[in-house]
Image (cartoon, rainbow, N blue to C red; front, side, top):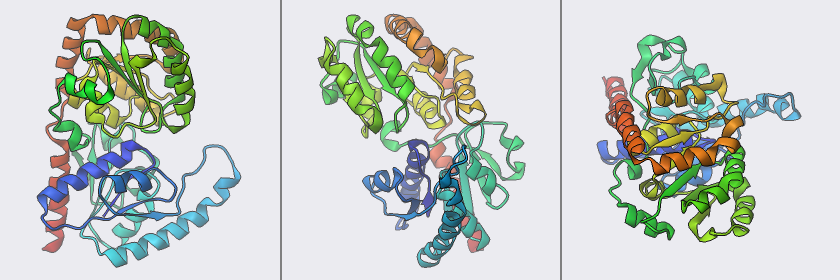
Length: 365
């Protein structure tokens, strides 16, 4: 049983782990548990797995009426999680972050079912901090996490990413054909996370004409809320045939394969994917992330000449110039790609799958 949701950074690692376990454990059954109304309820079935939902939601940072409902949603979700566990009878329960993983892992641990959580970021989320003392194993993407978790439970594995990305063997020509682009021209991939990022969308919109004047093609993932505005900006621009706008790119292996440079947030999974595909990246961290962990993630690469960090407040002013300079400097891109290799964990999915299998086997003794 797996739970991870709210963002692609929680959902896709859970799917990657399930795919890895499916290869390792013949005949295994899987059930995902998500939060009703969140994106996992759509994305997990698209990946071929069954999912059920809990009525859980997060606590708002501001005092709102919505927070008054949180205790009732939590109690209801705990009871429903208990019932789901009773019916499915899992051998192991895995959480990769997000609202629903809290009640599910809490109830599973209370029933002495083996439990494992994954913390991909350099600063743990609230749910994982809450669960840390109850679960059996904690897989992490960064060293130094003993500051937040019991040291004896920690295993440094790296962050799992989708096999479609890690195993892709696509040429730039094949990937460009998928998006209807010219393989002889440079391509910029812009991704603000699975839900998009308004400041990144605004920065790209502000710099679009400058980039197109340099014959740079663009694949732009906007998120649902940014799609219509981006389409309007592109529609009013000369060279719109060089821009592909999508609210969500499911076939990310094609997006990475066609890209010469990536502009991205700096969440753990975004970083892990950039490392895996060895693509030079300009990173614009989310400034409101807990303990500013996205800036920490980005700085890890930028301090080692494996990425370029632009603060969000400077994105509109600097983005076009930084992209153009990097696109035109093939030696710099080669250097960054080589330095990205220094951060590559050897098969994080397999490392996590091995930990899960160990927990299952230990519980059978």
